[in-house]
Amino acid sequence: MPFCKTCGTYFPKSLGVCPTCNAHEVLHTQDEPPALAPEEQKKFLLRRWLSICVLVPGLIGFIYLIYYIMFQLKS
Image (cartoon, rainbow, N blue to C red; front, side, top):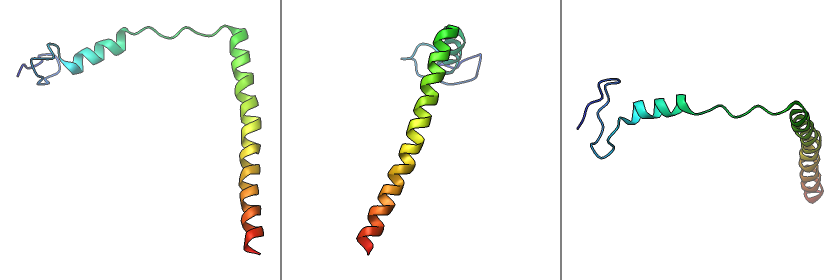
């Protein structure tokens, strides 16, 4: 088994390169995702807040409905 002189990891010959060092290099060589334009960022934030304002009360209503149905079946 080859031994990586940089990080000290043993790896199989079939890989050819140290998986630890190669993963480290790949992580550092990836480009950052492009930043959103200000108008796209505003639309994104608006969609996020709208979904929160609709889904949270909907979830609370659903839980209340389940509780109400269980209470009615119990009686």
